[in-house]
Image (cartoon, rainbow, N blue to C red):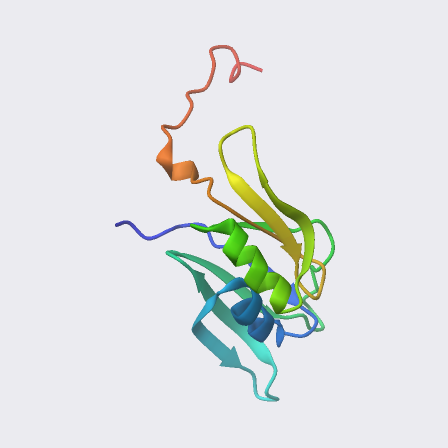
Length: 138
């Protein structure tokens, strides 16, 4: 299998968000790097065969939480996943539901306001759409 080439990256005021993402959303630690003062400067968390990178906001890095960021993670059983997130204190912002495109999904926010959506929709399971004639001519 080819490795992914796109990695969503989030900055947190408190990179202790790692523990929450592991406990509530089932992430696994791939790599965690602390700076000289002990703050997490970079972390890589795995979700299945995907990865999200995160770090602490600092003087030159603004926090991104609560500004419209959203990460989508494919899971086999959104209902069970949602129940675990709820037990761990995640704020469920969209209850599990069926979509008209055949996915079962829910959404939760982390402690800094980023939205995380989890569902069964797998974009790589479909052939890519071709660009319609004339669309590129604009």
